Length: 383
Image (cartoon, rainbow, N blue to C red; front, side, top):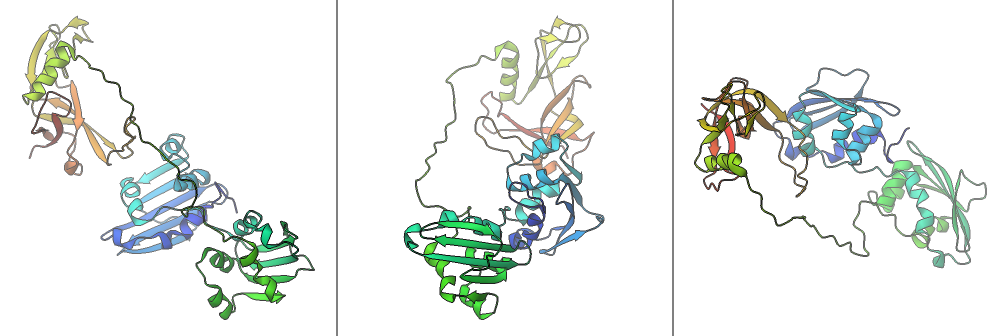
């Protein structure tokens, strides 16, 4: 089975039940389809209804609220956070068909983040690094593991006078051979299954020197999951926002604009040739290439022409903060202005589901206005 960044596509779906958070999806009724291409891919349907989860691998996708189409590597990398989802979409490695808001609004609440699945081979491969040579001086033995089921295999751990090596397969002269399901072996080493309950349930069988079977506890450090907190040197980080103490002059045109915002007014410059109103005001009409020295007041209400809905917000380059999504940017024709000269600004989030082309909107002002960009908060539907 193909692995990407140490994980498989099926790992993400197999771990969904244990990562599911039903308390966060009250009232949610969605069916999400996944079509993952490439080695290790397939088709899955994830249904969330009545705070219950159903994950099913299918041959063909039924009708879904939204379908995510992705290449296997991009899908796994995105789940692990090592592949930028925006870059993957831009490269055509990830596409969405249907209501994209479900992916951004439902999935982060419905599931805890995916972490790489621990496999039996991962634990076996870690044994030389966990070996305590000072505990095994003068000891010579071979410990065999016969692990069945998915991700199982056969290995021989050779302990020889302070050294430890791993061999594929079972040597014929093993001191002891422990047989069990691979998932039981993983559970024992990660603390999810107690040794006493595994032995009493007959999940572990020992052939050979039973005393040697306990050598792992004596000769090896405990296996630790990589995501667990580690003791050791504390890493110190300092968050710094670079800034330069400087002052910008707005000039006569933007100065007029900001002064107007302070008084709850929108000023535009007017072209003396074509009569076009430029908002915010500009010094020159780009069509006629003449100076627009006259200022006129437009608005304050307007009519929506175009709506730009944003679902993936880029982080602020200075603060690193990411704004809440989705949000809408309106392109409006202002009252008393040129109809095809549009002014753009944000919409009140509460009106996202109601706004449409042709909607009438009004500005919402900050109570404290200082002649800056924060004086105008957003526009909202003018009911």
